Length: 424
Ligand SMILES: Cc1cc2nc3c(=O)[nH]c(=O)nc-3n(C[C@H](O)[C@H](O)[C@H](O)COP(=O)(O)OP(=O)(O)OC[C@H]3O[C@@H](n4cnc5c(N)ncnc54)[C@H](O)[C@@H]3O)c2cc1C
Image (tube, rainbow, N blue to C red; front, side, top):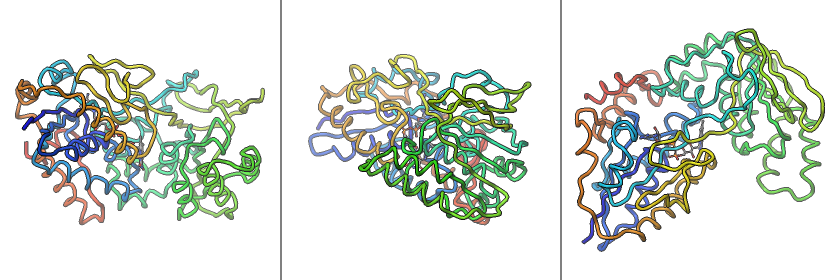
């Protein structure tokens, strides 16, 4: 019976759903052995380092990933980076097929003057900072200002604004990084302005996320009713279902009586940022009213942009517009791509499931005779690899450390801490 060796690079949702699809394609005629390679000592991609800590239910998808990982034909090679520890060429030679599932880790830039000032950062830095990603622990996040501006109109922008505007004690029972909870408790930020370039009818928020905002217990959430009413008119009589659901949810927010909470999250629409000003650090953002020749500015000390992500280039893989160049997931020869690296940063976790299943079907159709040319363990130092067993030790230790604190887990942050928990 043919046994094919497949390397999946990236242990995020797309990587696991690709592995699951391969497991599901197996039959008496077709068997796979799957090696998953991940640069961090921890798997789960953005489910660990992206999804907001106050949304623990979303993270339960990790149970599905662990089920895939506990199958006999699956091996985890975490703490192994494609590019520095092993190359695409090496993998292509050793494996019958290589699946790139490395996501899109870089934040898109606004490209306006002042964006490089201290106090201006991307959600691609702020989010992994509060989520205990080892590469972002030492980022300096200055929360000493009263007003923060978040630029973007999607769920990431909303997560960022919410994290800044929540009463920080609400984060105690979450898996937010300890260092971030400490800084957020010291934060002087009391007003967070979430600013979108286009109108409410074009926002990419999803309605469940909008509907939860009025339920925040310690934060005023403010939308101008006239903004939403104008958007309803612009959207016309038969708006798409998602647009209608969003506008309904926004109207509920706009209709809510103002409260006396100390913290406010305020939505601003139809404003295009054109410059960030300040003497050595952010002091104000200048906006142009979208479509009108009129500017205004907002005083603030922190600007966080959440306007999308793009993939960092890896040698041996073609990229265009922040994504891997591909044809329905096929890149070239025995190289494939899935997830955000394939489609760009859109879609929820579940979107990656059907997408990966389609690509793995194509991969299986294209297979020739199995190779027998070694695997990643032949080219890397064994003592650095975090295997599934090591990861289980890390996972168990984090969960145990969280338990007495009422947290789902207490995340270790540095690589050395993580490796120690894995007993490496
Ligand atoms: C801030 C944020 C919040 C989100 N919240 C939600 C939510 O609440 N609900 C929801 O459904 N969706 C949410 N999403 C979307 C969801 O996270 C994505 O759909 C999903 O993570 C994309 O999966 P992926 O596997 O393509 O990429 P990723 O999750 O980014 O995984 C890529 C993996 O590849 C690894 N990697 C990268 N480069 C290398 C390399 N050179 N070598 C080895 N490994 C490498 C990375 O370390 C990472 O583990 C959110 C996204 C973001 C950015």
